[in-house]
Length: 493
Picture 1 (cartoon, rainbow, N blue to C red):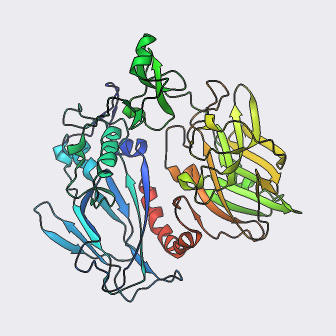
Picture 2: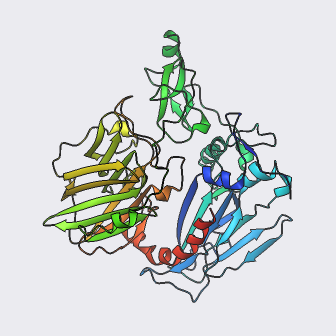
Picture 3: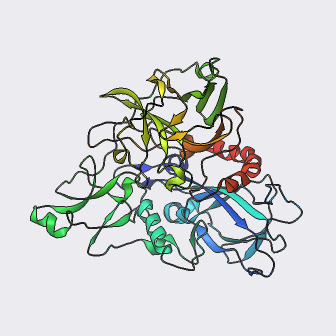
């Protein structure tokens, strides 16, 4: 039976006491991979496309790969390549999957955070590799997997005194980025293991801040700060000191004598009683079309002349809601440079809705907090009371981007229940997530909308910033076939 799971937190006090607890508080990474099969004679025959590696996460769940042609038609006459797993005794076995299988593989984090401290729960994390088929030139091998990570503040090592998972993972990312021929795949490949990369160091003119080495500036460096009787520290806009386990946020070097570490912002208070009426809310007959953006989030709309009236609806109380036009080719999946309508639930200022243009390179709200002077958006209303939150507006353009009323619009959406925004401290809006984290796909995504047809062309949260529209459409039939299989995985947790 083995010992109960007890994974220490970096605060030295708390711990994660079950697999369910670990999974609930760890991030999940969605991976979409497309490999074009080379023409015969272009090399690669007899070699692994991605060599043997062990993934970083606790485990990864994935669906079998599929072959598609340039017209997005499934090609089943040839296998989608080979998948080889290496057993604990070193024996390598080529594994075959059925099209409706869901495969779950333990990762290296299971070794470091579960096996090493709980021998009774020992699970082998198999190294694995794959190769594209040699006899399918010009086809696309498409694949989807979801990796479960440990909580960022979970401590590694048998006694729980090793680096946090956040620090280990960043060390891997930075180390592998310097290895030209590493077959990274999804994690620690080419013989690289997370346990070998426990420490990272910065140069004398840098400080380790927000999982990276940030270079000193003319106004923030060792000499300048010392002259002020201070030290160079990695700080938040709230005057608190950053550590690796503090995870995602907005941090930068400052001269400071602060000693208080990062503490979470007060969360948005959520309803605790019964919440009826959501179905009636999304069945609002004053709108003609709707699209489901996530499990509990919908977009409703109707075309009014040359404008569209939209209503974004979600369960629970939000800190903010956002909907806008994706900046195709922009950083962070088109977020940077995007024009958005954003509703803020600011406890001090009240409910506001404005148009914004997200900075071309910086994501934190404080860098683009000033609303646009555009008067496109009208009939604005933000409601976040009771059990639900809604944002309503009518427009024909967002910022300088006109909406297409007769064809496809490439849009993005997001929301946060983590905390309320504020105009204090230089302007703050929390990360797009839930009160205590949660699957990213439930709080942000990319979506294609045809306001005239109201039909879902393609909805996905993982279109890469460098993907072309044709590449995105290539995934459509594969994602549709995958949806039913992945639903069973989501229900496990």
